[in-house]
Each structure stands twice: as structure tokens, then as C-alpha cells.
Image 1 (cartoon, helix red, strand yellow):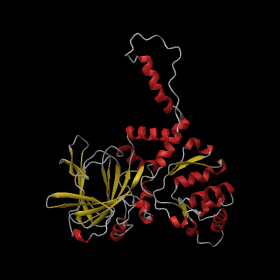
Image 2 (cartoon, helix red, strand yellow; image 1 turned 30 degrees about the horizontal axis):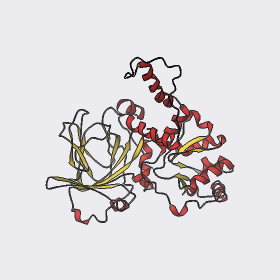
Image 3 (cartoon, rainbow, N blue to C red; image 1 turned 180 degrees about the vertical axis):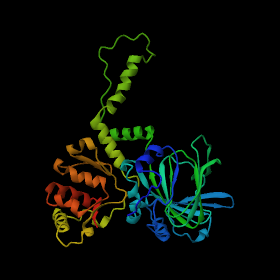
Image 4 (cartoon, rainbow, N blue to C red; image 1 turned 120 degrees about the vertical axis):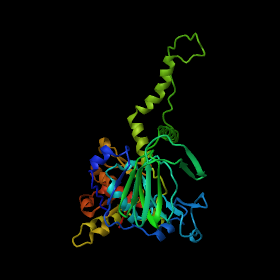
Length: 391
């Protein structure tokens, strides 16, 4: 497990003074940092169809970019290129552990873990991101420049690369292994590799009002709800047929506000929408549906037996799986997992909270529930869906 050290401020002070406000360098944020996966393992992920990856290079004054999957990297040479792989937390359990120190930001804000391998001179160019990111330097060294938030002209350096004009740096540093650079949305930045290196970016993202309303519309359409028509009995005589008067404007506006004011509808939408995985989940197809209720009950019983090697019976959440609950209605018996509502018996609400809050639940934490029929039913369904598994 990675231990995050904040030498100059507490987590509370970071959220108060830096989060979404200004960038900051955290020297030695991870002591004795070791890459959670090798460059060869990252390259192996980039050969997979379900993994999102990019190769970016700068050759003869020209930017080039192409999307994976890739079959070979031998033609690229020894400098001026980088491989970027998204959602590595979905496919590599050791790498996913790098997210854990940043859980002081709620899970619904998490985007993914992006990993890059770069040769000397490699980078993706000066650009602006619309998300918060903690860039953790792994092996090697990288030079980073970050500008202040402001109005910058963006342009396509390549059809797959959006860059910004040159900017004046407010941060100009060389990151060593274990150093972390936090950058909020809207700050231009550029990283150039000084020696062959790997970096690990833990990203947090929100959504625009446009995206949320678009997703809400899809939710209403898919479920065929909110079909009520405007009703206006007792309408007064209109003397200006071309006018939308203020009374009618308010009547139309109520169609929107009534949806937003419907707590049950909005919770169902928000829970389902935010829990939907952003990238494909790496479920083990061979094991889907392969557990009976008796199998799971036996494993849970074995987990609490004296002398058992306990780590083997930890219950793990699949990398990238999103599972949420609303704290004020958890006791009503519903949580949201990978875009779907899952009802449960209200008596197992405490362990459902554990499943949503923690990536790993220990045998000791499972012990009070190992004979609970409602929990066995629930977790058997989840294991058979490939969402949780025993180590």
C-alpha cells in the first residue's frame, strides 16, 4: 500500500487552500516509490483491444498521435515519444492501489488512473485539462511547467492533440521519483521527459450541466418516465397569439423544475449515472455465474476459521467498478453498482456501506455477516456478475 506524505499541509488544508484553486508540488509525496507495473506490462496493456491507449511523438518539428491497440513499439526509437494508457486501475490491481491514498476526495469524483511511459524528450505538448490531477512521478525524471489559469488560445497541433499557445510558468520543476504535482482544471501545463520515465496520474472529474442534462434525458427516455403533459384548464383568452406570456413561460419551466424536485427520480438518476463505469471492466468471463450460494457461504465460513491465511479470503472490488450509496437513504435498502440500482435487505446496510467505501473488505469485517442469508444472497449475485471476488 502506498502511503501519502504531505510535508507542508494537512489533507484538510490541501482541500481548503489548493483543491480546484492552484497547483502545488508535493516533494516526496511517496517515499521509496516503486513502479506498480513495468514498462513492458504497460506496453502489453496497450496491445489489448479493450484498453484505451495513445502513442504521441514529436519528430522533425511535427506532432504525431495514434490510438491503440498497438502491435509493436520497436520502430519508435529511443527518444521523443510517449505511450499513454487510460484506466490502468481497471486492468492492473497493483497499479490500482495507487488511488487509495487519494480517497480523501469522494469516489464519485474519481475518473481513472492514467499511466505514461516516455523516452527522453517525450511528452504530449502544452495543453489544458478539464479535470483535477495528481501526477505521481515514478522511475526517471520529468520537467514540468505549469502556467496560471487564464484565457489561452487552443489549437490542434494534430487531429488528436489540442495544444495551447506558449505560457509563462508559475511552476517550473523537475520531478523525481515519489514527487507529486497537483494541477486543477484550467491551468496550462507541459511535461517533458529528461530520462526514460513512467508517471502515474490519478484524475478526478466532474461533469458539465450540458452533459448532466443530456444524461438525465437519456435516463427518462430509457425508463419511459416523466411523460406528464402540460395542463392549463381555465386558460384566459389570448389577445396576442404570437406571445409566450410570463404565465405560460412559468408553466413550461415547471416541467423542468418538477423533474429536478422529484428526489426519488433524481437519486435514481444520479446513483445510476455516476456509478456507470467510464471504461470497460476487466471481468473474468470464465467465472461469471460460476458460484452457488453454498460456495460463497462456505468461503465466508472458512474465512473466519482459526489458523486460516486471512489475506486469501479478503473480498476485493473489481478494478474500476463504481459502487455508491446515498447516506441519508442507505437504510431504505438500495445502492448503485455499475449503472444499476441494487436493492438489499435493510439489515445488511452496514456491510453494503463497507463494500461501497472500501476496495478491500477483510475477513474480520465480513465475520459478522458470514451467516446472514441476505448478505450471502447479495454478495453471491455480485460475485457472479464479476464485480467482487475473493483473493
